[in-house]
Image 1 (spheres, rainbow, N blue to C red):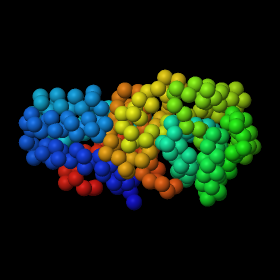
Image 2: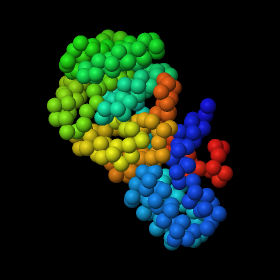
Image 3: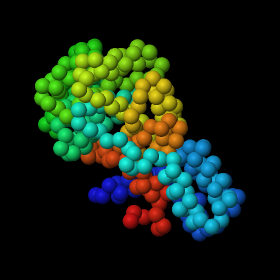
Image 4: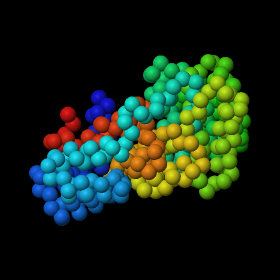
Length: 299
C-alpha cells in the first residue's frame, strides 16, 4: 500500500468530521453560517485556534482563490517543509519519551523496524524499569526482529541499564540506539531528573553519539497532548514527535498547532499495532488527507 494511501486512511475519521463544510465550500457556497460550521469543525479536529482564525479571515476576504486551495495553503504554511524535517542519522541515541499510555514501547519497536530497513544497524535498550511488562514486551519485539537488546526488569536504575546497553551497542558497532523510557508527567520531578541524568550519561561517556529526543503523543487526546508537549519542551530539547493512534481519532489536526506553537515537527505517525504501522510524516500528504481531494477519495 502506498504511503499516500496509508495517510488518507489514517485520517479518515478526522476528514469525516470536517467533510460537510468542505463539501459546501467545493460548491462555492460561502456564507456566514458555513464559515461558523467550518470554524467549529476545524477547532474540533484540533487544527488550532490561530490557524483556524487565519483560514476563516482569508475566506471572508478572498473571493477569487479556490477555497479548498486556500485552506490547504494556510495549513501547509503552518507545517514544516518536508526537506526541513530532520532525519535520524547514524551514530544517534534516540530517546522515546512521553506520558503513560501514549504507546512508547510499541512505538520504539516500530521505529527500530522502520530504521532497520534504511540499512541501519539498530540496537534497543529497555530503560523503563518501572513497568516490568515494558521490558518483556520490548524484548519480544526485538527477538521477532532479530535485533540486539539490553533490558533488565529486575533493575530499578534506568541509568544503569542505559549505560550497560550503550556499552554493548558500542561493541557491536550499532548505528542507532533506540531507548524506551518510562512514562512520566512533567510534575514527576524525580522522573524528570532521572531522564536528564540519562541524557548526561550519553553526553559525558558516549560522546561519539548524537542525541535525538522524540516525544510520543496520543493524537486522540487533542489539546491535552499539546499541553503535555508544551511542558516537556520547557524541560528538554524535543527534536520531533510521533503521533500515535492517528487512525482512531477525529482530532488528527494536532500536528499543526504542535509545530505552529512549539516548533516541534511530527516525524512519524502510528496507524496500528503492527510493526509496519509507522509511516514517515509527509506534510503534503497530511494536508491532502486532512481536507480530502476534489472527490474526497485517494488519488
